[in-house]
Length: 92
Image 1 (cartoon, rainbow, N blue to C red):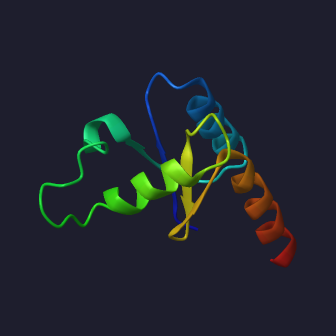
Image 2: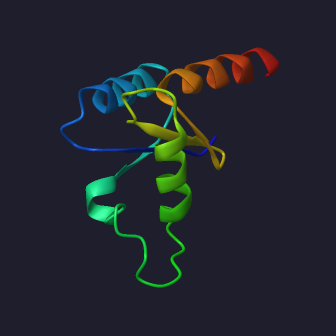
């Protein structure tokens, strides 16, 4: 399973997500959105998913936007992530 956690190093909820994934023994990649220059995606065409991340960031209902977590290429909010992982565990 390919999991990417998009967040900030000083984000408490991002760190909790990484801790939960580690407890579940799920490997993940962490990408610091500050290093992506996410808020300035208009430097030509980019392959780093910055446009998708920025769109997802702005349409979330959750007032706390981070982390954004990609599971097999599909972006999820913090809460949706655990639902998706639970439903995936039940199917396997």
